Image 1 (cartoon, rainbow, N blue to C red):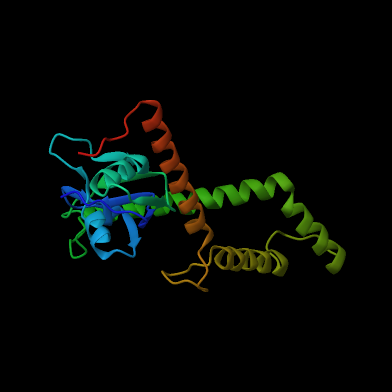
Image 2 (cartoon, rainbow, N blue to C red):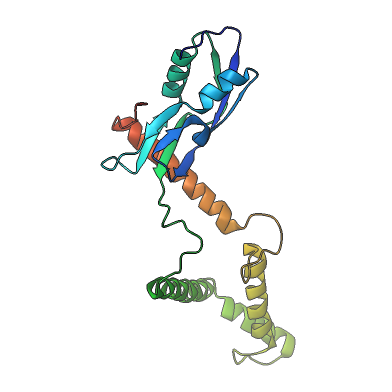
Length: 218
């Protein structure tokens, strides 16, 4: 049903990346919508913008311009204001994969342990290599010799306190220990993950634009 309206503004704040476990994707699933006219708002929320089929790609990019085009066809005379993303990445999620009560297989724990060992020994090797490059052992040895008057054997109170301070500094910097945060601020890893996710989303949108893979609304 087409509704002709005038002097009505519809605001859309689209999300950048959305994962949905449903076949028919509606506008309300990927964007926040506001309009003083409740009828127009309800029709806009139920606008179908994509349908995942069995043979279709699990990820699509939908331009906000095509959504605005469909909204103006649905409600001629309406003014649509977009205050969010210009392109929406829609991914098909798996219900079975996202079940919180699903038990992890032994192979999952093996992979977690393997990654943890790589991170532990890799970080330790990096710290030791950096300290050797900048000559930290020599600096600590010189400080110990100046204060105590004798040469350090490499395992003194200075090296031990430095190692403890280094571990505490890493814990405070990353703001995360034993599954808990020390403060409510996002950790540096979370910030980097958000930046990485943003860069990936921008790359997906750019690739879709270059390869003309943006999905038409059906």
